[in-house]
Image (tube, rainbow, N blue to C red; front, side):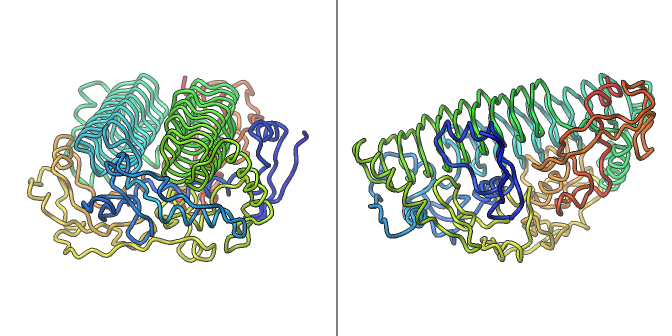
Length: 606
């Protein structure tokens, strides 16, 4: 089939479905989408609450718990031990299909009465790591999300195989790291971005195999460098001592200088390693993957994000998880040996042929179920024979086409579309959608989305951020008893908690690393790091190498390029926005990066 241009029923913009896309839809026997790729991504991410945690009680054992579902979500919530136990059965909540009402309305009613788990993950793999979500195999961790196999870590997202690290985003196989974004196999990397195999680096960006460096960018296998200038060991240690005093003022001054220095050097148009025929960003060890972000070990897929290895193949519009997944489409938080999962949310561990289902564990041939485990041929949590199941499934699919659910904007949700955002149990601002596609409360309300107001707590701030001592050397362990006022004072759009406390292990980390205490609450610190992770969006751009240097005359090339003195002719798709305005308020730096193609970039850093 040839490519076809359609109009997104949600944003009214044009989008293209090409021949390869049509082949995939035909393979899994679904109609082509009516929402554009970006609207489909936002729709899924609006069902993903990673970081907003609430105190409530288990609706089964009545114990106090932490949950991603607030009390006003309207859902029945069990603590994870109760939910995973055999003391109850999802079939108890089964309902007959009513052909006179839209199917998604009936599924929403089933969701509202059937118990859901408080947090995403296997609680049996956690040791002293209660305040975590979307995690596996953690020990002594606090407020980690979307992280696995880590120990003694706090306030981070997407951490894997890490130790003794605080406030990080996308960190792997690293130790003693602080305030990093997209770093791997690092030791004592502080305030650094896009570094790999580095040791004892401070405010470095895109450095590989470096050690004892400060404020550097695009270096390879260097040591004792400050702002890309080489020093002797003695000279370096003398200058580095100035920055190791634990002074907040000095760190802030160095931060401003380093970030300004970084912008004077070109960056490769894409974060990637060991790929073949890919487009998107933050892609590793993948092949034949298009329009995909933050993915590893993925093949023959498109429009995916947050994908975990190993072996994810033949998937479209799939966000979060993986680990041996095949033929997943328009689904969220799916993984662990699954195949043909369509329009579903949290279907894990040996699911097969599952459609429109939520919290599905080990099920086969199920349609429109909630919180079922190891069942087969179920619809709306009611058991059927195979023949009855297949007949009713066809009836419902036909009914969804004739009587689709319509949201408050008039968008029709026929068979083939993921769940509407307005059905999500989360406020839009409490989801991952807000991180990548931020809205104001007024904008979200106009679209019919929920908005989660900041919960009011009765606590008195005992230490304002401006009164925190400048140096950690002036701090005693008694600071753990203080209630610290966040610098933003709740005036930002970042789920600011207004006040926060420091846990003892966190204070010990700051003292050990000679780091100043934070002035922002954990949520605001997380959003500050997000400014250094590229958006899930691609722009068509050309290489900014003008021959002798960058187009803006900020950077002078150090090597001869294949295009010699002429401007580079290479064009590409990149997630580096052409201007700060293009990111729609994501808190991006005021000055855009200089972006080079792979050939020009490698000539400068190799």
